[in-house]
Amino acid sequence: MAKVKKTFFCKNCGHESAKWLGCCPACGEWNTFVEEIISKPTTSAVGINNSNSQAQLIGDIDFSHELRINLNSAEINRILGGGLVCGSMVLVGGEPGIGKSTLSLQIALNCPNLKTLYISGEESAQQIKIRATRLGANDAQCYILSETLLETIIMQTKEIKPDILIIDSIQTLYTERIDSSAGSISQIRDCAMQLLKFAKETDTPVFVIGHITKDGTLAGPKVLEHIVDVVLQFEGDNNHAYRILRATKNRFGSTAETGIFEMQHNGLREIENPSEILISQHNDSSFSGVAIAATMDGIRPLFIETQSLVSTAAYGVPQRSTTGIDVRRLNMLLAVLEKRAGFRLAMKDVFFNITGGLRISDTAADMAIVSSVLSSNFDIPIPINCCFCAEVGLTGEFRPVSHVNQRINEAARLNFKKIFISKYNKLEDKQPSSIEIIPVAKIEELMKIIFRKT
Ligand SMILES: Nc1ncnc2c1ncn2[C@@H]1O[C@H](COP(=O)(O)OP(=O)(O)O)[C@@H](O)[C@H]1O
Ligand SMILES: [Mg+2]
Image 1: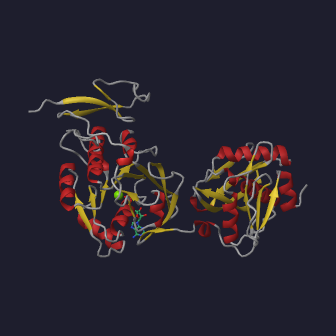
Image 2: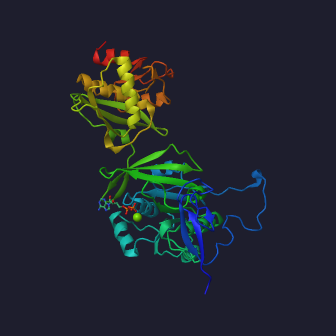
Image 3: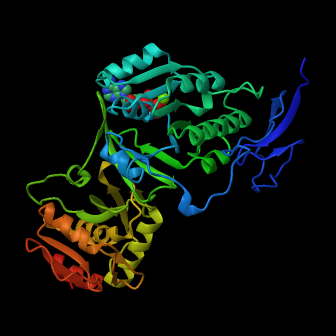
């Protein structure tokens, strides 16, 4: 019988140690060591090189063949930086039930003229078939394999030679090289390394689904995120059908890109014009406390509705509550309002919401947030054909934002009649004629123009 060998691994970074340690010497985290049984030693680390590799001049490297595979989805292509790079490894993480399996099966089924292999360690072939029927499966060249042993998977993949390999999920795989149970740190690390080696050697792109832990990070060692080329995070709100796919790491494209999807009974539908669904289409402007912010989502303008409710505080300490933005940002903006606009906050509760369950971090939404708070406080509605984009400084001035011309063009396209921007923003000479651009320097000026208050 093989000698049972035990080692300790750091749950955070995958550092290996012969004995238990309180603090990981590699990443500095406390209490992260867990014991795992390894009867077969993790021999030579699996890399992407073979022994007879030679250094080449960069000019001599041949890349005449098509480098990127066009997936039949504009949003996913854009997030990946213009298509799926051959030989790349993409890790998709997300909460349980968010739609990772749906997304990857949809990718597998919707690629015309491509052979795909979908491997599931969580569901049987029949269960995948049920989902495929729900997604409206056509006669796609999609092979299904329900398997968890990595060696069998690689053998099957070499036989079928798919153009895209999809693994659902890395936590269910195990390799014979190691004796610890599937999902353990050493198993995940070794399986990921072997898949990476396979991807680079055969130039096959590999999609890998990863589970996340309770605190929202990808389960398994940190090296998993280091070795893959792209990490996609699939997020959403349980109360909303909207799902957001964003790249947190991308070796072949920008990480500023996000894609918005809607979960429907027949799968995930791409939303090409998110602004149109995020802004409620009131015909009249009878609601106070609503302002439209012209934010950017990567390089794409995204118009969102901000809502505030200011009411008299019932208890001693006023309440501040936000959804969609950081509560500290709201507190800062309220402090600026108090100082610069004489807005008495000590006796007021302020509730703030961004519709659609989105979270934003673009500071260009500041002006809209401030306007919605003021609108609710005065109970004066803001005309529905106005939108706002400027950052608020601590001195109460409106600061310029990036991509202002793109935001103005999008506002004109969405039929807004007025856009309030910072006075200090540089504009292009040519602007759309259908929209009035109103430059504002300070909060006092904005109050005068919109609410006629001095
Ligand atoms: N018939 C249906 N109609 C609408 N949504 C569905 C239907 N069946 C499943 N879903 C959605 O799909 C989700 C499950 O997706 P799945 O890809 O299995 O998630 P994951 O793999 O991330 O755990 C469910 O949470 C539900 O929102
Ligand atoms: Mg799943």
